[in-house]
Image (cartoon, rainbow, N blue to C red; front, side, top):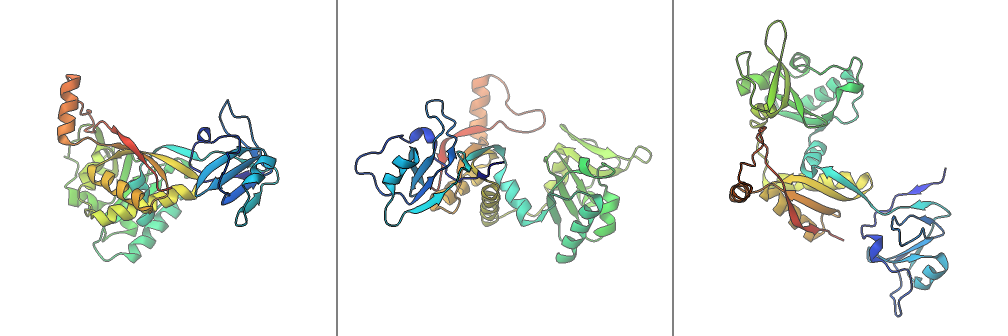
Length: 315
């Protein structure tokens, strides 16, 4: 199997000419002797790519690409390896990814025991009574593949409220302390668009909160400062880059989050191309609803997303 070279080159190859322009600048880097998949019907697979200041300036044959070589040009001989255009994550929540990285990352916990051990280790690091927040676990791969419970969390975190979101974001598990702080008991009705899972015999909440029911506890979590949001965005971007993504479609940002993304990209702190879908303000929502002749607020309490007109890149 041929080696695959993951390239973090974020300019579409369709913007690149296939012939050497007169007076072209020497490239910073030349990738030669490879199998370059352009994904463009008009541009067949090539052998070489020339890059100048993070931009692709030539795609074509190795022989022609060598004309871009200068005294400081770095030559990367692919030796038949495959190069693709930068990949795009078509749906992500950059701030959520970052918060997971900065709190308790439960991604990759393959057993219930590993999940509980990770929670216990986090509890040991936190002052008594502080919230333990995390995300990333998913139980279908456990044996048995059953949802964790408040009772299990109570055993490892009796003095800390715990709020742990499933990898897909559509459910969370909390412990008894968190349920008590939120005032959730057997008499609490399910909120619209959500469900509080209950023991079939006693009727008591099991700690499993689905969709909009998560808000009942989530609204009690410590509020993040603008600097916290910025650190989450940076951590989320670093995680995406580490996986080989060059572009992300960020699904659903508040005005604050949108402003933070814009600033971090302009500063060059985030080196991702971001297409951002911004949640509408109250005024925008009212205008959208009036134009549509109906309410655009979803039954679950969610809001429509408005694609931003700009894409921001730090490259």
